[in-house]
Image (cartoon, rainbow, N blue to C red; front, side):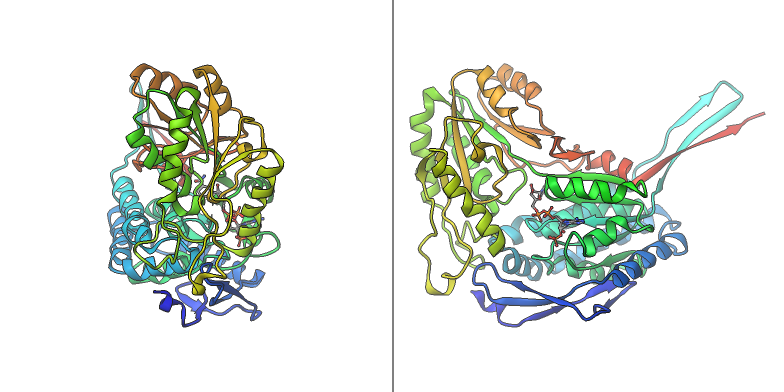
Length: 491
Ligand code: NDP
């Protein structure tokens, strides 16, 4: 089913309502990670191109109708984008599977519909927001307005390109800002279509611009240092977040960062393993483990360790690794050669650190046409030392580590013993323990007896080095707006 890869696409920049070529004619190639075939040639934005995009966004913000049109009219257009995405669902899912290597079925059933929902949700949510009123006796009346900030740089990673970009674009647009978007250079295909989708939805030219390129010394850095950019919403690695914070510091840009994770998935002895095992398999290997929220450290109470290992290993063995376009596939390749090298280096690190290999640990056997793909088996290690590198570092691939513990206190110490704090997962049938542990795990989201369930009104973000700020619901409203207090003398 890889025939979708046969034509090589030309991916242009989208600036001020039209597709344009790179001004200095630079292009880079994008490969299908399942086969290494070149699937696209992408125009790389020069500084002049990023400058044009930022200025177009500024002009659309200052002079265009977008900021001043009624909130209902604006939100109707954002909702229309969501409808167009659903109308183009299959095409977008095919492209995402081709570009990222994720199973088409996951993209078409979950990620692309969720991308549409991101836009629809924030359009509905922002439309219903008001402000506050603070009367001061009979003399003065204070009220608040939430006004758009200006031009937003939206910079996103390669693991969930379309879903994560719309997560930022929805609140950005619904609150009246304009945007310059940069997807990761390895996965630009679906995000490159957002400009034309916005235009078709009736969103004015210059409001949504998409540029392509790399991070440091390229489009990413040009955006984060550009004087016309007021705010940066970034999702990616913690180290990149640090760099971007420094880049934006000179012009005091407002930042929101969603960064790396190394979630503890804690399985207590009273857990319902019928549920915990399949969900933990998902949490470890969905998207080939390339999920910031992955349950990549599984903490198992020693009394159930043997049973858990046996059942978890058997469940991993059932995963179908193969062609992302095939509906039967559960797990595709990792995203790129560079990432494959990084992920597989942890096989040596694990060996060096005396971790016990429970399952996987090598390239799977696959048909000839996938023999050059960046595939790795779902891999499980047992590691007693929670400070080992495979227990501490974000591998971001299909490698999961099981760490045994004896007591609740020990589980908490291990769970909190990393630099990250994006999320945690707890499996127990005890209500009191569920609350107790939830309160003490230092992470932005805790899932009890479930994983990856999101209510878009709820805050999303990380403790410690997993993020700065929160997005979701009114947290996104606060990030994408400036609160203004107006005080009126009544006498
Ligand atoms: P990166 O940080 O490498 O890249 C993310 C984006 O930032 C890309 O578009 C990248 O461009 C760009 N970029 C890189 N350097 C700079 C720079 N100096 N200035 C401006 N932009 C820059 O992350 P990955 O793409 O490798 O994604 C994986 C990471 O994302 C993991 O750490 C994962 O945990 C995290 N993530 C976090 C989520 C969360 O919600 N907390 C959700 C999903 C992922 P380019 O790729 O073209 O170099």
